[in-house]
Image (cartoon, rainbow, N blue to C red; front, side, top):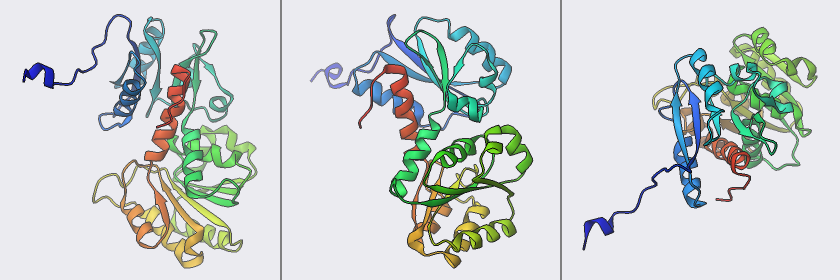
Length: 296
């Protein structure tokens, strides 16, 4: 057999190829390029998705100003540390969500040719929570972390009519509130210092109502195999002391199973990592770029 015939044909870009980029600082382990490349191939689209590592916000801004003028660019994703800085660029129209949380993860072009910013992470959080509990169930949300990754969780839960209250635990509550002004307008969101004493008090308070508790970790701790997230483990332990296991749910935004996830599952708590969120927000971004849904 001719060896050339046994080799599968790989995608080769041409002059008509449309392209998307993932903009960020440390993106070498990102799963997004593989995910979107697979979808482009499944849908037989002449498109390519490439990682674009950028060292500084100045380079990021300068690059975007030029890249939106190129003919083949149809959009992209933005990750840390540029989700907040991109909203300061006056070349984009912001959705109401982006305006509220002052963070964006998706660049796309609307039907009138305007470049826009959206935050599909919120959709990813919503779908992840729905994977744990049904749409109709009432629940409390306890969010670990108050940085950029927490914005989507805090906004989604504050807008969800089934979320009775959201508790945010952060190292600097004042800074978190300053970064996300929408928190000041939400009566059902509390910010606390990320310390064990505050976590314990809140778990005790939540346990009085006997409703569902969704624990959401947004801290970038626990990705390494032997790395422990002490706050996640502590809050799961405290919840187990005070709340029935079938009323506790754990969602970790880290894409791999962490020690906290393993601990939760060992104790019969339903737990998921961040892959569900990644896939759902990516589907939403894909739909904005290509005006079609991914069902797989």
